[in-house]
Every structure is written in C-alpha cells, then in structure tokens.
Image 1 (tube, rainbow over the protein chains, first blue to last red):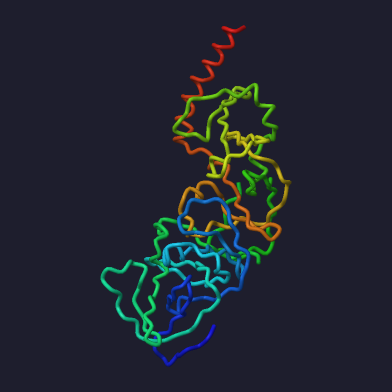
Image 2 (cartoon, chains in turn blue, red; image 1 turned 90 degrees about the vertical axis):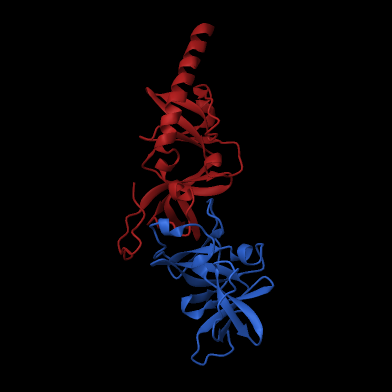
Length: 155
Length: 177
C-alpha cells in the first residue's frame, strides 16, 4: 500500500475496482489480504462471491464490482477486508481488488443528492474526484435480520 | 445435532469431533452429520417403491416412499440447492425427518472439529440449508441442516398429496393384481 499524504486529516484507503477508483474510510479497513483461496458453495445471497479464511475468521467476499462498475471483474486477486457497519451492528467483509491500494487524506465532500446510498461522499485526490464508499450500505439485503456473525476459525 | 458456535464464544481448547458424511451433489461437496442419517441406499433400490406425486409447487419433491409405515418425501438435492440437475446415484434416508435425499455420490466419512455460523452477509435460503461452515482439507464445506430440506408448511402440504398418491398407487396395484 503506498502512502500519498497523511497529515492529520481524515484518511482513506483508495482502491481500484475495474477501471475506477474508490475510497474507504481508513478506520474501517482491517487489512489488504494477499491472494488466498476463494471458497464457493451454493447460496442465494446477492453480491456474495464466496468466503475466504483469514486470521482465523470466515470472511464473506462481496462482488462489489458488479455494483460499482456494473460487472464482475476477474482481474481482482487481492482482498481488502473492511468492517461493514449497519445500525448498531458490524461485521467483516472483503472486496476483491487488484492490490494497488493507496492511503490518501482529505476532507470528504458531501455526495450529490442523486447518488446511490452506498456512496458516502467524494474525495479530491490530485484533482481527481474519487467516490467514497459506505461499505455497510452496499445493496446486499437486509443483513440486520441475521443474528449470527463470522467468528474465530482455524486457519 | 450440534449447533453452530455462538458468535462471540472463545475458541474451544478441547473440541469434540463430529462424524460427518461428505457427499457430492452436482459436483459440489457438502457435509452432513452422520447421526441423523439412518440409511444410505442406491437409488435403484428405491425404484420399485417410489410413488410419483403431482406437486408442481415444490419441484424438488417428485416422489414419496413408504417405509415401515412412514411416508418419506424424496428431495432432489440438486433442485434444493439450486444446482444443475445431475443423475442421482444414492439416497440418504434421514432419521426422524421422514425425508430421503437424492445425492450424486458419497465421498467418505470424516471428522470435523467445529461448525462455524454462516457470516451475517448470507441472508438467503442458505440460512435454512446449512447449520454452518466447516473446514476440512484446506477447504470450507457447508454443513447441511437435515431439518432444512423441507419446512413444516411444505411437509404439511406434501403429506396430503402423498396420501392421495399412495392410495391411488395401492388402488392401481389392486386393479392390476
């Protein structure tokens, strides 16, 4: 992960999904995991590609590319693990990325009124506008109805 | 049946291994606890006993079997899990559930040390299908919930359909005999 700037302002992890760059607030990011095996099994949950096992936990992998750029991307081999928050709950989730993640800082601008709920705002990085994601607001269904959480797992 | 571990429980030092049957459905590996499985049979053993039922609302159940005075609903696991339909080679007859499950083949018996709850991200039918996930031979395997093949409402609906089909089959047999 390269460091661009970090001078006390809010910091963000900038990730590449297909041709576009997005940012996640750095306090939600747990780690950039190396290429590990994606385990797949039958399920009916939208936007879930499978799970990875990382540091003793089963982490669901979100097919964020299909929401963010309108198609799945097979070029993403690394996994950015971040905390998803909704209401008073949170859980870990991973987004497949290509490994080119950067740390950036800056003031987040409010999103345009017509932006989808999963865009929390916008960041200007070297005059390039980068959308900031609200990982918990990605349209993955009503996860609040689900009681169980991922937990310790033998790695 | 062992339940999936509580989310915030500490890792257990001394884990009790659970014996499971590993089986394939349409090329996908699953595990089911050995305890609720009463019998494993080749599908051709049931061929004469299976009675076809009219049940368009629940296409995964097309047959019932009467065994020891009990009616078993035969669930096609390919359709249950939304997998491409493959020719089943074996049937798992479940104890106390009155369910027989058509599967492709048995891989082997194994022991798993724990079943871990599905992550909250999974919000669909899989929450009924699986007790959770387990880890075996560097792979994550879904551990099937034997009670998830048919829900109580589905059972009720099937029971009346099955009774009619079995009565008709008995009548047909009497006429032919």
